[in-house]
Image (cartoon, rainbow, N blue to C red; front, top):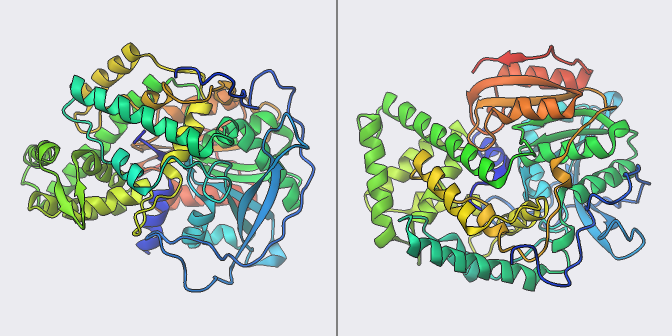
Amino acid sequence: MRRLLTATAVLVTVAACGSSAGTSGTPTPSAAGTQPPATSAQGGQIEWGACTDLTRPDGGTPAKPDPSLQCGKLAVPLDYAKPDGEQLDLALIRVAATDKSKRIGSLVFNFGGPGGSGVDTLAQAAKAFGPLNARYDLVSFDPRGVERSDGVRCGDGKQMDSFMALNTLPANAETRTRNEAANKTFAGLCQQDSGKVLPYVGTVNAAKDMDRLRAALGDAKLNYFGMSYGTQLGGVYATLFPAQVGRTVLDAPLDPTVSFEERTLAQTKGFQQAYESFLKACVAEGCQLGKTVDAADDKIAALMTKLVGQPLAVRGRQLTQGLASTGIAAALYSEYSWPLLEEALAQATQGDGGGLMYLADSYTGRTADGQYNTQMSAFPAITCVDSAERPDRETLLRTEEAALKISPLFGSAGAGSLCSVWPVPGSDEAKRVDATGSGPILVVGGKGDPATPYEWAPKLTEQLKTAVLVTFEGEGHGAYLSGNPCVMKTVNSYLLEGKVPAADTTCAA
């Protein structure tokens, strides 16, 4: 559950830095593969107005509405099998194009997760897309099951605190038994608090929502920028609505066909490689953690071991080993965060866990008042509905043992451990992508991406059949947000001028 597929943390950093198959009687998700082929949506109505309920990265709210931002809602069917039945309101945000004489249309974003708030993220990081905003209205939304769009909730702040603080070490029977019980409790709270929406939060329904959004915006085709999980959403959209695909960029791509076990091992390897790159960079610049990579690694390992039995007090809370490893993972998403990670780790070795707690809270969506956004609850809700897999204990144990061999710091059983007890069934429909009939799609993969390993980029490109691959040889989750001039020029030329790059274009770090 801890390995999120999201670019939101990177965006915020850029802005700041310059039951196995479900319970009896549960309705089957409307994303089932037996449905008839999707057809293009009719436009609904959006009433745009001031954004009055945005959330800052620190969990607070802006003192007054930003006049450059507009917010609205779009009604969509809760269950697409009953289009005239109960409706769900999608929360939307828009930043109008600054050069209206050259306006192309709308560019819709999904920043990842699954479960990230597009409304809050675009509000915080719109300036990172300034060149695109000149000719596009930048638009994003909270997908169904996220925040303002009937966001999935799983208990109160204290219950979330308890779940997030769980240790993953030592990797023994006692730890596994405790975490298995916690997963069952968490899944039960999700069913208790959000049972109505849980069957309907999958990616296929979200893709249908996006076509409703396209039509409501008045665009003949959907121009789209998907990051991380957003690449899967974009791929599913292109599969359902190939004729409506406009200029589409899929950055930090996910291979939707991977199993929970394959995903866990690939991501564990990716985070371990990013961690090793951080240590090398730290030592090269005079690292507070040690003069050599081995010395720094040993110091961090000793800290993690100590935190299992002696968590650090931080403002009335305790920094556990589980929270500390989450904080480290959060900072590995972007090189911008590496200096902060070095400082936070150095402080923790001296008894101050505030820096690592801050990083962990930014990752899990905990606000200063002790509440959580829906990131950590929407993530498993969408992930588990998007797969028919419900791993048994033997598979989970095998996965964990293999992951721990790759990385003692990041090894775990992955999202499959929670999906194995999820209260509603899943569908594999979102695992199948084929955009035959669409225009050219741009897939951008990074060689040093910890969360979506590069190997997934050519696989998604091949599955889509209409895509062109661009390779970024640098570090971090998401190539465009790295600020690499080659990547930005390539993507901007495609989105603004329609120039499709040559196949297998490579951008050096």
